[in-house]
Amino acid sequence: MTLTTQLTTRDPASARLRCGLCAQRCLLPEGQVGRCGAILHHNDQLHALAAGRPVVLHADPIERKPLYHVFPGSSVLSLGTMGCTMSCSFCQNWRIAHARPDPEEPIIPITLEHAALSRTRKPIGTSCSAICNRQSTIVNGITPPEAIIRATLDQGCNGIAFTYNEPTIYLDYAAEIIQLAQAAEFFCIFKSNGYMTIEALELLPRFAAINIDLKSFSDSFYRRICGARLQPVLEVIEYLQRRGIWLEVTTLLIPRLNDSDEELRALTNWLAALSPEIPWHVWRFHPDYQLTHVPWTHVNAVERAISIGRAAGLRYVYASNIPGDPNQHTRCPTCGTPLIERIGNSTTSIRLNGDRCTACGWTLPGRFG
Ligand code: SF4
Image (cartoon, rainbow, N blue to C red; front, side, top):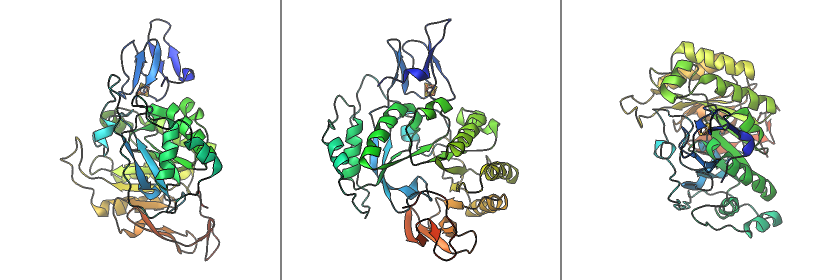
Protein backbone atom coordinates (compact mmCIF):
# COMPACT_ATOMS: atom_id res chain seq x y z
CA MET A 1 0.00 0.00 0.00
CA THR A 2 1.41 3.39 -0.96
CA LEU A 3 1.31 6.32 1.41
CA THR A 4 -1.14 9.11 0.65
CA THR A 5 0.70 11.53 -1.61
CA GLN A 6 -0.55 14.55 0.35
CA LEU A 7 1.60 13.34 3.22
CA THR A 8 4.72 12.79 1.12
CA THR A 9 6.91 15.75 0.20
CA ARG A 10 10.08 15.77 -1.85
CA ASP A 11 13.27 17.35 -0.55
CA PRO A 12 14.20 19.73 -3.39
CA ALA A 13 17.92 19.40 -2.66
CA SER A 14 18.01 15.59 -2.89
CA ALA A 15 16.06 12.58 -4.09
CA ARG A 16 14.77 11.98 -0.58
CA LEU A 17 11.10 11.86 0.42
CA ARG A 18 9.73 13.23 3.68
CA CYS A 19 7.00 11.29 5.46
CA GLY A 20 4.30 13.45 7.04
CA LEU A 21 2.47 10.78 8.99
CA CYS A 22 4.00 11.51 12.38
CA ALA A 23 6.00 14.23 14.10
CA GLN A 24 9.28 12.39 13.42
CA ARG A 25 8.89 13.62 9.82
CA CYS A 26 11.58 11.24 8.55
CA LEU A 27 13.51 12.21 5.42
CA LEU A 28 14.13 8.95 3.58
CA PRO A 29 16.53 8.13 0.76
CA GLU A 30 15.58 5.37 -1.69
CA GLY A 31 15.62 1.94 -0.02
CA GLN A 32 15.45 3.23 3.57
CA VAL A 33 12.72 2.71 6.17
CA GLY A 34 11.65 5.36 8.68
CA ARG A 35 12.18 5.32 12.44
CA CYS A 36 8.98 3.32 12.82
CA GLY A 37 10.41 0.54 10.62
CA ALA A 38 7.13 0.47 8.73
CA ILE A 39 7.42 3.13 6.01
CA LEU A 40 9.75 2.34 3.09
CA HIS A 41 11.01 4.61 0.31
CA HIS A 42 10.86 2.33 -2.73
CA ASN A 43 10.71 3.29 -6.41
CA ASP A 44 10.21 6.96 -5.62
CA GLN A 45 7.19 6.35 -3.39
CA LEU A 46 6.63 5.79 0.31
CA HIS A 47 5.06 2.43 1.10
CA ALA A 48 3.26 1.52 4.32
CA LEU A 49 4.65 -1.95 5.06
CA ALA A 50 2.28 -2.67 7.94
CA ALA A 51 -0.86 -1.82 5.96
CA GLY A 52 -2.90 -4.94 5.33
CA ARG A 53 -0.64 -7.02 7.56
CA PRO A 54 -2.26 -7.47 10.95
CA VAL A 55 -0.30 -9.76 13.27
CA VAL A 56 -2.89 -9.55 16.06
CA LEU A 57 -6.61 -9.73 15.43
CA HIS A 58 -8.99 -10.74 18.17
CA ALA A 59 -12.07 -9.71 20.10
CA ASP A 60 -11.51 -7.52 23.17
CA PRO A 61 -13.77 -5.73 25.60
CA ILE A 62 -13.69 -1.99 24.85
CA GLU A 63 -12.78 -1.42 28.50
CA ARG A 64 -9.35 -2.92 27.78
CA LYS A 65 -8.27 -0.04 25.49
CA PRO A 66 -9.19 1.64 27.94
CA LEU A 67 -12.30 3.55 26.81
CA TYR A 68 -14.75 3.80 29.72
CA HIS A 69 -17.22 6.31 28.27
CA VAL A 70 -17.79 4.61 24.91
CA PHE A 71 -20.49 1.96 24.47
CA PRO A 72 -19.67 0.20 27.76
CA GLY A 73 -19.86 -3.58 27.58
CA SER A 74 -19.27 -3.73 23.84
CA SER A 75 -16.60 -5.83 22.16
CA VAL A 76 -14.20 -4.63 19.50
CA LEU A 77 -12.18 -6.52 16.93
CA SER A 78 -8.69 -5.38 17.92
CA LEU A 79 -6.14 -5.05 15.17
CA GLY A 80 -2.40 -4.68 15.67
CA THR A 81 0.55 -4.70 13.26
CA MET A 82 4.33 -4.28 13.64
CA GLY A 83 6.25 -1.05 14.20
CA CYS A 84 5.87 2.16 16.19
CA THR A 85 6.62 5.86 15.82
CA MET A 86 8.14 6.02 19.32
CA SER A 87 10.77 3.83 20.97
CA CYS A 88 9.66 3.70 24.62
CA SER A 89 11.96 1.64 26.82
CA PHE A 90 8.97 0.67 29.00
CA CYS A 91 6.81 -0.53 26.09
CA GLN A 92 4.19 -3.00 27.29
CA ASN A 93 3.55 -4.27 23.73
CA TRP A 94 7.18 -4.38 22.63
CA ARG A 95 6.95 -7.79 20.97
CA ILE A 96 5.01 -6.27 18.10
CA ALA A 97 5.64 -2.53 18.52
CA HIS A 98 9.40 -2.99 18.27
CA ALA A 99 9.26 -5.76 15.69
CA ARG A 100 9.57 -4.67 12.08
CA PRO A 101 7.51 -5.77 9.06
CA ASP A 102 9.71 -7.41 6.43
CA PRO A 103 8.96 -6.08 2.94
CA GLU A 104 10.44 -9.21 1.36
CA GLU A 105 8.38 -11.75 3.25
CA PRO A 106 4.62 -11.36 3.27
CA ILE A 107 3.23 -11.96 6.73
CA ILE A 108 0.24 -14.29 6.90
CA PRO A 109 -0.19 -15.04 10.60
CA ILE A 110 -3.86 -14.14 10.84
CA THR A 111 -5.22 -16.35 13.58
CA LEU A 112 -8.52 -15.18 14.89
CA GLU A 113 -8.61 -15.82 18.60
CA HIS A 114 -12.03 -15.69 20.13
CA ALA A 115 -11.84 -14.09 23.55
CA ALA A 116 -14.82 -16.10 24.81
CA LEU A 117 -16.86 -12.96 25.21
CA SER A 118 -20.54 -13.34 25.84
CA ARG A 119 -21.58 -10.41 23.67
CA THR A 120 -24.67 -9.96 21.59
CA ARG A 121 -24.02 -10.75 17.95
CA LYS A 122 -24.73 -7.82 15.72
CA PRO A 123 -27.53 -8.48 13.22
CA ILE A 124 -26.32 -8.72 9.64
CA GLY A 125 -27.46 -5.60 7.82
CA THR A 126 -27.71 -5.60 4.05
CA SER A 127 -24.79 -3.18 3.64
CA CYS A 128 -22.60 -5.36 5.87
CA SER A 129 -23.49 -8.47 3.88
CA ALA A 130 -22.67 -6.67 0.67
CA ILE A 131 -19.22 -5.67 1.96
CA CYS A 132 -18.49 -9.15 3.25
CA ASN A 133 -19.43 -10.64 -0.10
CA ARG A 134 -16.73 -8.58 -1.78
CA GLN A 135 -13.13 -9.76 -2.02
CA SER A 136 -12.33 -10.60 1.59
CA THR A 137 -9.63 -13.25 1.43
CA ILE A 138 -5.94 -12.77 2.15
CA VAL A 139 -3.90 -12.45 -1.06
CA ASN A 140 -0.08 -12.38 -1.04
CA GLY A 141 -0.12 -11.82 2.70
CA ILE A 142 -2.31 -8.72 2.44
CA THR A 143 -5.58 -8.70 4.36
CA PRO A 144 -8.06 -6.46 2.53
CA PRO A 145 -10.25 -4.09 4.58
CA GLU A 146 -13.28 -6.20 3.62
CA ALA A 147 -11.75 -9.15 5.50
CA ILE A 148 -11.58 -7.02 8.66
CA ILE A 149 -15.30 -6.24 8.32
CA ARG A 150 -15.98 -9.95 7.79
CA ALA A 151 -13.94 -10.85 10.89
CA THR A 152 -15.76 -8.19 12.96
CA LEU A 153 -19.04 -9.79 12.00
CA ASP A 154 -17.81 -13.36 12.53
CA GLN A 155 -16.45 -12.52 15.98
CA GLY A 156 -19.75 -10.94 17.04
CA CYS A 157 -18.07 -7.59 17.70
CA ASN A 158 -19.74 -4.19 17.75
CA GLY A 159 -16.76 -2.23 16.48
CA ILE A 160 -13.12 -2.20 15.40
CA ALA A 161 -10.11 -1.00 17.42
CA PHE A 162 -6.78 0.05 15.91
CA THR A 163 -4.58 -0.74 18.85
CA TYR A 164 -1.57 -2.58 20.40
CA ASN A 165 1.04 -0.85 18.23
CA GLU A 166 0.80 2.66 16.78
CA PRO A 167 -1.92 2.82 14.08
CA THR A 168 -0.41 5.96 12.50
CA ILE A 169 1.93 3.75 10.47
CA TYR A 170 -0.99 2.23 8.55
CA LEU A 171 -3.35 5.21 8.57
CA ASP A 172 -4.51 4.82 4.94
CA TYR A 173 -5.48 1.21 5.62
CA ALA A 174 -7.34 2.30 8.77
CA ALA A 175 -9.15 4.99 6.77
CA GLU A 176 -10.40 2.39 4.28
CA ILE A 177 -11.59 0.14 7.10
CA ILE A 178 -13.39 3.07 8.79
CA GLN A 179 -15.26 3.86 5.58
CA LEU A 180 -16.42 0.27 5.18
CA ALA A 181 -17.23 0.03 8.89
CA GLN A 182 -19.51 3.07 8.65
CA ALA A 183 -21.49 1.38 5.87
CA ALA A 184 -21.65 -1.82 7.92
CA GLU A 185 -22.68 0.11 11.08
CA PHE A 186 -19.64 -0.83 13.15
CA PHE A 187 -17.94 1.92 15.16
CA CYS A 188 -14.16 2.45 15.04
CA ILE A 189 -11.79 3.52 17.80
CA PHE A 190 -8.07 4.22 18.12
CA LYS A 191 -5.49 3.66 20.82
CA SER A 192 -2.55 5.90 19.99
CA ASN A 193 0.60 7.55 21.31
CA GLY A 194 -0.70 10.84 19.88
CA TYR A 195 2.37 11.42 17.71
CA MET A 196 0.57 11.59 14.38
CA THR A 197 0.56 14.92 12.55
CA ILE A 198 -2.58 17.03 12.36
CA GLU A 199 -2.45 16.64 8.54
CA ALA A 200 -2.62 12.87 8.96
CA LEU A 201 -5.55 13.11 11.37
CA GLU A 202 -7.42 15.39 8.99
CA LEU A 203 -7.32 12.70 6.30
CA LEU A 204 -9.18 10.21 8.48
CA PRO A 205 -12.93 9.73 8.11
CA ARG A 206 -14.93 10.38 11.27
CA PHE A 207 -14.38 7.74 13.93
CA ALA A 208 -16.06 7.17 17.30
CA ALA A 209 -13.33 7.72 19.86
CA ILE A 210 -9.64 7.66 20.68
CA ASN A 211 -7.50 7.01 23.72
CA ILE A 212 -4.20 8.90 23.69
CA ASP A 213 -1.22 8.02 25.87
CA LEU A 214 0.11 11.11 27.61
CA LYS A 215 3.20 9.35 28.87
CA SER A 216 4.61 12.22 30.88
CA PHE A 217 4.44 16.00 31.12
CA SER A 218 8.18 16.34 30.65
CA ASP A 219 9.79 16.92 27.27
CA SER A 220 13.00 15.47 28.68
CA PHE A 221 11.16 12.20 29.49
CA TYR A 222 9.78 12.02 25.96
CA ARG A 223 13.22 12.66 24.43
CA ARG A 224 15.22 10.31 26.66
CA ILE A 225 12.79 7.45 27.08
CA CYS A 226 10.45 7.55 24.08
CA GLY A 227 12.61 9.01 21.30
CA ALA A 228 9.98 11.69 20.77
CA ARG A 229 8.83 15.10 22.04
CA LEU A 230 5.99 16.23 24.28
CA GLN A 231 4.61 19.26 22.38
CA PRO A 232 3.26 17.40 19.29
CA VAL A 233 1.30 15.06 21.59
CA LEU A 234 -0.25 18.02 23.44
CA GLU A 235 -1.19 19.61 20.11
CA VAL A 236 -2.90 16.42 18.94
CA ILE A 237 -4.90 16.18 22.19
CA GLU A 238 -5.98 19.83 21.80
CA TYR A 239 -6.91 19.22 18.15
CA LEU A 240 -9.03 16.14 18.94
CA GLN A 241 -10.84 18.02 21.69
CA ARG A 242 -11.54 20.95 19.34
CA ARG A 243 -12.77 18.61 16.61
CA GLY A 244 -15.25 17.00 19.01
CA ILE A 245 -13.89 13.46 18.76
CA TRP A 246 -14.48 11.59 21.99
CA LEU A 247 -11.15 11.50 23.77
CA GLU A 248 -9.79 9.68 26.82
CA VAL A 249 -6.21 9.97 28.06
CA THR A 250 -3.97 7.36 29.69
CA THR A 251 -0.79 7.82 31.70
CA LEU A 252 1.32 4.78 32.52
CA LEU A 253 2.65 5.59 35.97
CA ILE A 254 6.27 4.42 36.25
CA PRO A 255 8.03 4.51 39.63
CA ARG A 256 10.54 7.38 39.88
CA LEU A 257 10.32 8.24 36.17
CA ASN A 258 7.07 10.18 35.78
CA ASP A 259 5.28 9.89 39.12
CA SER A 260 6.29 13.02 41.04
CA ASP A 261 3.47 15.11 42.53
CA GLU A 262 4.81 18.15 40.70
CA GLU A 263 4.68 16.50 37.28
CA LEU A 264 1.27 14.92 37.87
CA ARG A 265 -0.12 18.28 39.00
CA ALA A 266 1.19 19.97 35.87
CA LEU A 267 -0.23 17.23 33.63
CA THR A 268 -3.68 17.13 35.23
CA ASN A 269 -3.97 20.93 35.53
CA TRP A 270 -3.29 21.16 31.79
CA LEU A 271 -5.81 18.42 30.98
CA ALA A 272 -8.52 19.83 33.27
CA ALA A 273 -8.06 23.29 31.73
CA LEU A 274 -8.69 21.72 28.32
CA SER A 275 -11.82 20.00 29.66
CA PRO A 276 -12.67 18.56 33.09
CA GLU A 277 -14.81 16.00 31.24
CA ILE A 278 -11.88 14.16 29.62
CA PRO A 279 -11.51 10.81 31.40
CA TRP A 280 -7.97 10.22 32.69
CA HIS A 281 -6.75 6.64 33.21
CA VAL A 282 -3.83 6.06 35.55
CA TRP A 283 -2.31 2.80 34.34
CA ARG A 284 -0.24 0.69 36.71
CA PHE A 285 3.19 -0.16 35.26
CA HIS A 286 4.51 -3.71 35.22
CA PRO A 287 8.21 -4.44 34.57
CA ASP A 288 8.73 -5.13 30.87
CA TYR A 289 11.03 -4.72 27.86
CA GLN A 290 14.07 -2.61 28.87
CA LEU A 291 12.70 -1.66 32.29
CA THR A 292 12.52 -5.09 33.91
CA HIS A 293 14.60 -3.69 36.81
CA VAL A 294 11.86 -1.15 37.69
CA PRO A 295 9.24 -2.51 40.13
CA TRP A 296 5.49 -2.58 39.65
CA THR A 297 3.80 0.71 40.48
CA HIS A 298 2.56 0.56 44.06
CA VAL A 299 -1.23 0.76 44.36
CA ASN A 300 -0.79 3.70 46.77
CA ALA A 301 1.03 5.64 44.04
CA VAL A 302 -1.90 5.12 41.67
CA GLU A 303 -4.28 6.34 44.39
CA ARG A 304 -2.09 9.40 44.98
CA ALA A 305 -2.14 10.21 41.25
CA ILE A 306 -5.93 9.81 41.21
CA SER A 307 -6.26 12.27 44.12
CA ILE A 308 -4.07 14.77 42.26
CA GLY A 309 -6.19 14.42 39.11
CA ARG A 310 -9.41 14.97 41.04
CA ALA A 311 -7.93 17.96 42.89
CA ALA A 312 -7.05 19.45 39.50
CA GLY A 313 -10.74 19.31 38.60
CA LEU A 314 -10.94 16.20 36.41
CA ARG A 315 -14.33 14.58 36.99
CA TYR A 316 -13.57 11.10 35.70
CA VAL A 317 -10.30 9.62 36.92
CA TYR A 318 -9.72 5.87 36.82
CA ALA A 319 -7.31 3.24 38.08
CA SER A 320 -6.29 0.87 35.30
CA ASN A 321 -4.55 -2.50 35.49
CA ILE A 322 -5.71 -3.00 39.10
CA PRO A 323 -8.64 -5.45 38.85
CA GLY A 324 -11.23 -4.93 41.57
CA ASP A 325 -10.10 -1.40 42.45
CA PRO A 326 -13.15 0.78 43.26
CA ASN A 327 -11.58 3.58 41.19
CA GLN A 328 -12.53 1.60 38.09
CA HIS A 329 -16.17 2.65 38.53
CA THR A 330 -17.80 5.74 37.04
CA ARG A 331 -19.67 7.73 39.67
CA CYS A 332 -22.09 10.56 39.07
CA PRO A 333 -20.17 13.75 39.92
CA THR A 334 -23.28 15.36 41.44
CA CYS A 335 -25.05 12.63 43.47
CA GLY A 336 -22.37 9.91 43.72
CA THR A 337 -24.50 7.14 42.19
CA PRO A 338 -22.30 4.43 40.65
CA LEU A 339 -23.26 4.84 36.99
CA ILE A 340 -21.00 2.19 35.47
CA GLU A 341 -19.34 -0.52 37.57
CA ARG A 342 -16.43 -2.58 36.32
CA ILE A 343 -14.27 -5.45 37.43
CA GLY A 344 -11.07 -5.73 35.44
CA ASN A 345 -12.01 -5.29 31.80
CA SER A 346 -15.67 -6.16 32.30
CA THR A 347 -18.57 -3.79 32.80
CA THR A 348 -20.75 -5.40 35.46
CA SER A 349 -23.59 -2.90 35.82
CA ILE A 350 -24.87 0.25 34.14
CA ARG A 351 -27.25 2.72 35.82
CA LEU A 352 -27.84 5.09 32.95
CA ASN A 353 -30.97 6.16 31.20
CA GLY A 354 -29.42 6.77 27.79
CA ASP A 355 -26.55 8.99 28.89
CA ARG A 356 -28.23 10.30 32.06
CA CYS A 357 -27.84 9.37 35.70
CA THR A 358 -30.93 7.42 36.75
CA ALA A 359 -30.94 9.17 40.15
CA CYS A 360 -30.36 12.87 39.39
CA GLY A 361 -30.39 13.21 35.59
CA TRP A 362 -26.72 14.32 35.23
CA THR A 363 -25.54 13.86 31.64
CA LEU A 364 -22.52 11.58 31.46
CA PRO A 365 -20.23 12.72 28.63
CA GLY A 366 -19.17 10.13 26.08
CA ARG A 367 -20.78 7.92 23.45
CA PHE A 368 -23.69 5.85 24.72
CA GLY A 369 -26.63 4.06 23.13
S1 SF4 B 1 5.43 7.26 10.28
FE1 SF4 B 1 6.75 8.65 11.46
S2 SF4 B 1 8.52 7.37 12.02
FE2 SF4 B 1 7.48 6.33 10.32
S3 SF4 B 1 8.51 7.07 8.47
FE3 SF4 B 1 6.72 8.37 8.80
S4 SF4 B 1 7.53 10.13 9.95
FE4 SF4 B 1 9.06 8.46 10.14
